[in-house]
Length: 421
Image (cartoon, rainbow, N blue to C red; front, side, top):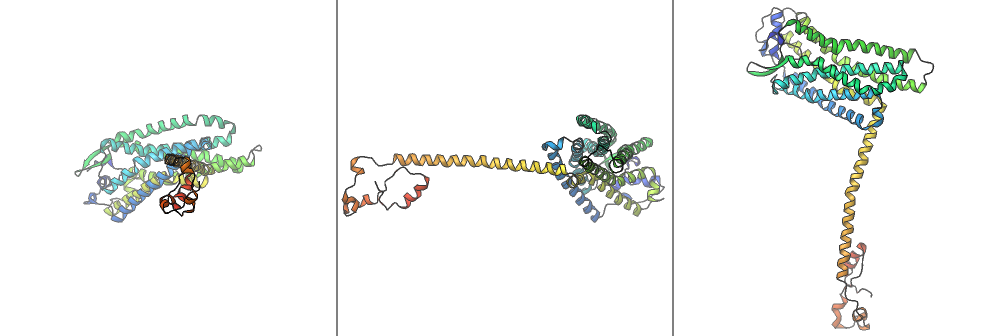
């Protein structure tokens, strides 16, 4: 059984429950033997599989369009969308399948100590990177509206900003790589974090909530409010109607992405902080087995909702981004043209093969052509009338001449006729 310091709400294994018993003054027996009900287990596994399939297909299309569609790469916002899709793909490939397996086998960890550290590092890296790129997108939209002349400079610096955000997100997520480890509990290997110092534990949890949610929320709120004010209330006299319409569409896309991210991760951070700061208030004092079971079920639903954030973005792009739809049609047309060219390349050798067969047949007919002497070319009137009984063999003779592919069949079908000289 893990140490009491090892509890976090996303580790919904019953082995991690005893911290509540110790902190809230309860001494429950049999709580550590609780297991999710069959219906809850099936529901969680189905949700994980749907998130994985929808997110993998959708983000793969986003990456394909972002890389192959030329006009899609010109926008700074869509450059950040590319990196946002990369972060979601990393999470979907590294974390969701592993968490599904762990939930199926009731917290058994199959990937060793390094896998335990890596999976949780990628999970928090995705959370932090997604929040960072959404802040960058909101800032870019704010600058595009307040300072339109900076568009070229922002586009040139987009990749450098993205690299910096990846580095910062990795550094913020690094403590979770160092604190998680594989350990043995009840004879089974599990993956859990181990923090000895209670103050360090509070610092990590509060820092994760502040850097991964609260501070990005405040920055995004400021930039979004300023954008909405300038677009719908304060309008520049020199701004054209078409320019305003385009900027409003992009702004609506960014605001929708931000709202989706905040809505998906709000329950996670709320319950996460409550489990550390107010565990007894969350479960009651003293907690009983029913309250702990309810807590584990709610926390699992919050975690699933956070995972949904990684698969919902491509759906938003499809509904709100005309550039994404145009880029998808462009990529699809290229794939269709490539398939047509490949089919033509396959058909051309077949045509050449038919021509080669025709040439061989022509050469064969030439080699079997009868001699062209006077005795063979001139027929007597007796042969032409067919009255001689000694020349019956010649009446069935087929004279070979130069023929093409279309006349070979008719010649063979009419082999009972005597060819004309």
